[in-house]
Image (cartoon, rainbow, N blue to C red):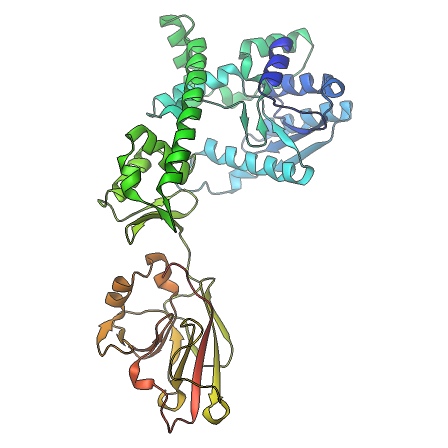
Length: 453
């Protein structure tokens, strides 16, 4: 095993001189073998070794036993160990996420926080056998080349030195080097999908086709090369399709479908499923309005351009309203404006036309009732568009103006009842224009304006 792992580290440039390496140390055979291997080679590899253990809080006394075990080992060897308690039994698993996935998310969040603090790499103990399970798991879910590529040797700051060796080789290494380890009893429970694949499916496949596990590993390697090639072509496609604000659907749709799916996967994130990517394709074709993506983004067509926008939450509720005051208002990061009341006789440079590229607007303050308030849209709102002599519902105007759906809930208006007096980026209705006998001017100056309107 030693030669395989050393060669694998060198071939894939997993570690470099001077690296700080945090081993994800569960206490099981795989992680203890990895920990022992790296500890014995700290000087030859010129690395600093740390360890991290997350107690998920799901296995009671057994979990506490694992924690005590890794503490004892690290203390005896003088390796700094970081421990965190996740208390998962007291937490609510997020919707659509299983217990295993939630535990994994908490574990990697912990590891990444430590890595950022210590400018370190994270070493996990995934083996060749784990990779075969992963490939099989992705295959039965209908994954494409990226999913069938299995576990990568390197992903960002995460390295997997044991990917070249099987679980049997790991156990043999532990026996040969007297490496103690603990066994997680839940690894034997078949209600978990991965356990069933490891305990039932893979042995049956080996019985049907000897060498099936090794074959899955070879396929993963081939798929990794294919995925890398497709990724390069997908990047070129995205560069070709790029346009201000997004991508041109025509160019994306003209590409071969495998390449298009790879490009969309790159845009939508690594956790995007084939079902989700198919929906995004429908958005490109104009057959679907919008799709919510992982990371709280939305994919949609906007004025003929395919865009990915953050699914922003408005700062305000529909009930919020604010009286006119001389101060700065912030309805969202996109909508910030400053209000000031000015005596006309003091406004020597006044012009009835908006200035500063339409970011400053004036109205006759005396024509505005004290009941006027700043708020967001409500059902029944109407707006007499300045300079056009037409009145429209706010809903119809926002549709025609192309106000993004996710921005409408925080779009600033000045209203009396359901009558809109002023709208962001548009100005005041015509009946409020400043005249010769105007005494006070209401000035609204936009500090920031949305680039999406």
